[in-house]
Every structure is written in structure tokens, then in C-alpha cells.
Image 1 (cartoon, rainbow, N blue to C red):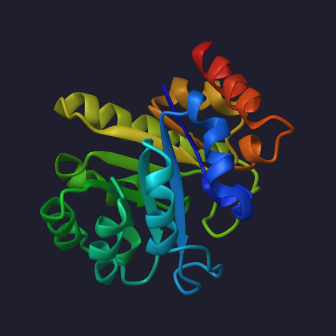
Image 2 (cartoon, rainbow, N blue to C red):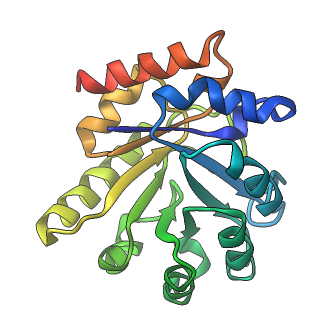
Length: 216
């Protein structure tokens, strides 16, 4: 299991320090990019990724909750993003996959809680990561939707049946109390935002999530 703290919940006035605190217990960082159109909230863009890149050698996983991710891919690659994750709800993602590969980035695909898992199955052999949202995207701190674990199980079964090297990530409401459920369902990467960065000691909170997942 890998842990990916989401900087959406970090203190942006001290972002480099916040990342440094959790780096020893993190495998990668999750970067939530929102444009105020695909989701109601506006967050960050390539400039923040570019500022963060020199401060950490952690893998930067950029989740693009934007209407037109294609126009931003070059900027994220130049900023130092290691992978971009795009939404299946936007339509055929293959041109975006091609561009990400050409730019040297990893390829991720994500589906929202209302979206059937069947929507992503045709693309599994073209991606590195499948992200299953366990909240409706837009705000941090939402409650985990346990029903999405059925999608994780279905995707895990399909990935394993095809012998694909695709990781499954889950994002939304993840904490020590449900980390084990997510891993047992087939998740490889847990994204945790407020459960880590809103804790009194983010590194301790991250360790607690890891321990809970290890018991699954």
C-alpha cells in the first residue's frame, strides 16, 4: 500500500514545510487541481507545482478536475508533474493519454461516485493508474462513500484477470478507520488530505493510516 497525502488540505502559506513534515511517511503527493467549472471550487495550477517541485523528490500526482485538461498538460509537464489524472466523464480520454505519454508523464484516469465502473474498463490497458473517487469532487473533508468499494472490487478483478500493471487509487474521506476496507477491496494507493494535514501531528496521522491499512 502507498500513501499519498493531498496538499489540498495543507497550509499553503507553509506548503514546503507541510510537505517536508509528511515526506518521511509518504510515497507520493496528491495535487488537486480545480478550475471552478468542472467542479465549483478553484484551487491551484502549474505555478504551484513548479514552486513545489524543487522542494521535494516525492512523485507529484496531479488530479485535473478541469473542463479542458488538454490545454494544461504541457504546462504541468514543464512544472514537474510526474503524472496527470483526467476524468472519464469528459469523454474519450485517449487523445489526452497520447499527449501525456509524449510529454513523459504517467497516465491516470478517474471516475466520480455516480459514474459506473464500466465507463473506465475499456481504457485499463492504456493507463498506469485508476483513481476511484470516494467523495464527490470539489471540497476536502467530505465523508467517505463506502458504496464505491464495489467499483474498486470490480476494477481490481478486471485488472488482475487481464494481468495489467495498473494501480488503483482511492480519494475522499480516507482515514485510519476505513483505510483497511479500501485496501481489502483492492486499492494500492490511499489519498488522505484532512485526515493528515488537519491532524495535530500530520506525520503521526499518516503513520496511523499506514498501520490500519497494513492490518487489512
